[in-house]
Amino acid sequence: GENVEQHPSTLSVQEGDSAVIKCTYSDSASNYFPWYKQELGKRPQLIIDIRSNVGEKKDQRIAVTLNKTAKHFSLHITETQPEDSAVYFCAASKYPQGAQKLVFGQGTRLTINP
Amino acid sequence: SAVISQKPSRDICQRGTSLTIQCQVDSQVTMMFWYRQQPGQSLTLIATANQGSEATYESGFVIDKFPISRPNLTFSTLTVSNMSPEDSSIYLCSGGRLDTGELFFGEGSRLTVL
Image 1: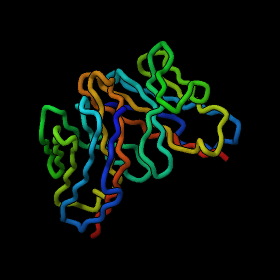
Image 2: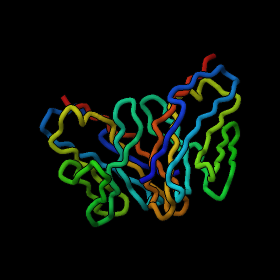
Image 3: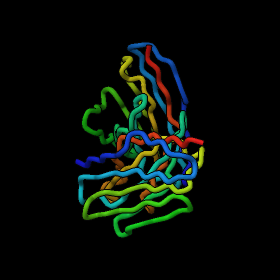
Image 4: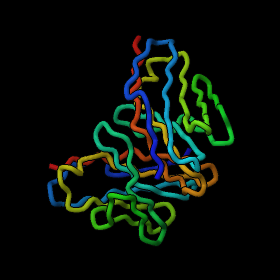
């Protein structure tokens, strides 16, 4: 089955700097790659996603890139702010064949230092 | 997004007892899933809740321990049976939109087993 590896497990950056979180996946049939942000005690929130027919997607300060050949995808957060502090999870699924069964990475705890 | 409502939000349970968690989703959702998130860990899929039929369980999860019902399109329950302290965890209901592949989560039910 699918296996998603996520690095780093913790990341600390200065406010205003950029943060990058990387994930690799094992199943070449996976084609949908969402990212979730989970604040302490809250539910995971979908923040951005990318599909296998796209190499990059941006939404304001957040961007995601996908390299299908290498089977890895990354989350980029620019101009980080204190409210970006949270745990971020990457995930992969085969949509629609996989009926949205997401396999999650281990998570990255991002801390933004003022 | 989609509206996913889950209850109870938290409970403290005695060893050997069972607890049922309820989840209500809005009509945008077609697929429903149950995930477990152990303290400080990632999200692990327990099962897919199938409308009007038996749930589809992932490896390591069995129906006797985690019976799931989905009597209609927008409602599902997860029961954690014969609980032990190892079952202390957050249980998350999730709903997926078949048209986009997006998956949304409920607030989670934090169970503590004494």
